Length: 271
Image 1 (cartoon, rainbow, N blue to C red):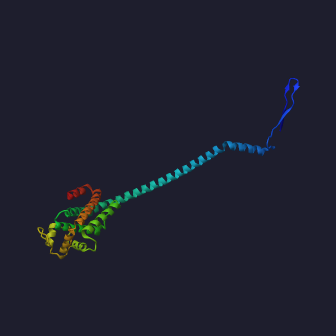
Image 2: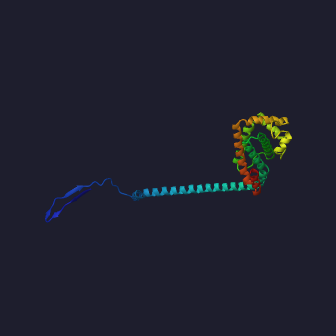
Image 3: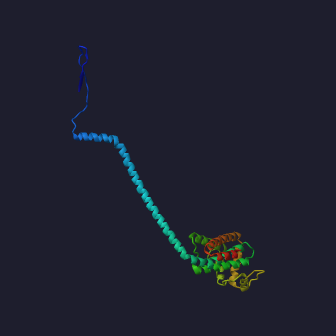
């Protein structure tokens, strides 16, 4: 495009002036071109805000779905935990009378016998220690025969009691194929339930003042092997330690399962 002009100063006419202006590429626009131009202009102004709004909306929706899924999983876990607790409470409710019976009938004598044996191991009366060893072995054998083992509220307590018993037995009697282990178990069948140390000495003919031998060959064989085992002080200390731990685990179970009257009996026996 050429732009020209001239100026009038009074009556004098100045020469014409002109300049060439390049308008670039031009075309005649139709309705489609006009619409496209409007849309392009709108997009240039609002494209970034709209994009950010869409991204924010998508993130919010995703966060809501994740939160809803988390809430569902949490509710499912809560319901599962509640069902487990209800089932455990119902199971324990049914087992509680049985546990009371086991604690009073089996665990209480077992705890008392193990505590007495642990105390005797620190003393010099070997014959009394020998009696309590046979008596404790007899009570444990009867318990296993009657109920099969330990049934506590917590499986960890059962495992701990079994491990303490295993270690104390190995320290005192050795492995199951050792001579002392077999000899002591052979004496168990000779000891009657409720028998005390006095009747034990009278029954097998040992002098309480100077215990040297027994009339019964099986008891005398186990006695001589046991005296040799007592000479190893480290084994005796290990046995006493594990017996006290064994007694502690059972006492905890007895204390939580027995009624108040039976707990008082336990305290009187241990004192």
